[in-house]
Length: 630
Ligand code: PLP
Image (tube, rainbow, N blue to C red; front, side, top):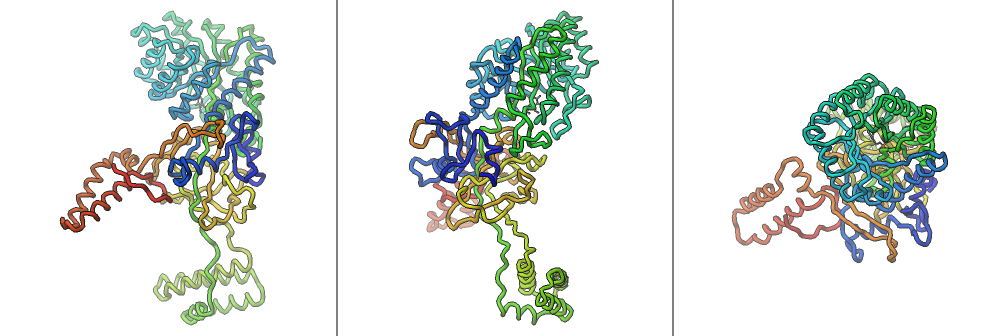
């Protein structure tokens, strides 16, 4: 566990159990009531067709853990309740979940259900997000907020006003000044008194990777001058009482509570100014930014870690707002946050298989190979070989390497000219590998081929170099004997993972065993990765299972299981029509066969094999596929 820092990034939810497997403690503790769930048992149950009651799902696989989601929500809520109570703050905390972090229906529905007792709401940033937030909140607490962020057109604003008409607690947050006229006109037309928020561009700037949206030149929000114009215009049309919320977002992964307090303090001043100017302010919405410790280092110096706990975050927020409001004698506002990463990151684990590994051991060269190689060498190359042999006998390592490089380069040149055969080129490769291995300079890092697409499942690694904890989910009772990087299935040189938490360029890994399988997990990827992932090489999303704690013999129950998109599904996304494609290919098979009736059976077999190809997932399949039809 120490080798992979599981205790650092995994706590309190993930740990290595007595069998050497990674297990989940959905409630952050393992007690009689809350048992651990062994990830290997889940994999076996859902993917092994021989497992009794098994589901035969293909990997890669996302394991969703709603109990973890519930615990994250409750922990955030109780951190704020603790801070409010301890500091004598005179209003409550009421968060919203920004659905862009993971729009999966069951994730959003779970959040609404789990958060209902404490009025937890949703944030949307686009029209489809608003539609899903509206329908999910119909089953939630009527006091939960529905915060409408993002750039808006008339259609978006009308939809938000309809939400208000449907008695959802909707706030239209102005991201651009131009949105105000639309809100004023449309609310009159639809006869709805809107609740309006403004997003402020703060001067406080977060300098990390995720801070580019913050500061005066940030992409979103209104400048001080624009906010003043909004206030004036609302006053002119007798709608200043509609302005009730101040929103800002410093950026994701805020590294320290010092930066947080600085930004929140500045925003609290803006809030108090809006009160002074006559707005009926009620809520300060501090945006997202509550960070995750991806590498377990608890450092405020890195983009992938944070130097505070949930409790310290909440305490810094409450204190900064209270301090400013008390000095300005302003009633304490309701505190809203839009934490996404911190709520959903832990709730899912991506599990995939390593299917093969490269070997750096060169094939042993026999005396015959060497003799054949030397005999075929042109004179000047033979001189290089002689120098290499002499240096090897004298034990001069540096010189050996030099001559080996020279020999190889000369042989490659000769091959390009056509004066050296492939067998000799292979022999010189083998010889040079042997030399570097003998003197200890051979690259010991192996390449593990994984049944996964980095572009589909870990897009932030490819796009912005974001690191996630990636570890085998079993064999922790055996010492890993090699180091490796991971190479995915796509025909793309970027489809590899060669940077790992802790600044490592390779991962300690176990040798792949004969028929045994090697399962790995990518953790803390529950936020952003699923919606950002693309279809490069037409690899679609993974299969998904939802696993809850239960009292049964395995301590878990699979409450939902969905196979990932098939080849037909991903082709359809690109406008192909799998049914027509299948018919075309089937017709072609009959034509090629010339209508011989003797081969009707083989034609039927061919058709069903084609149908299977459309039906199965694009990933490598280890199980013999069962028959199916389109
Ligand atoms: N709110 C807004 C306006 C955002 O832009 C973001 C993301 O950057 C979030 C909330 C969620 O942030 P986080 O995932 O850091 O909590």
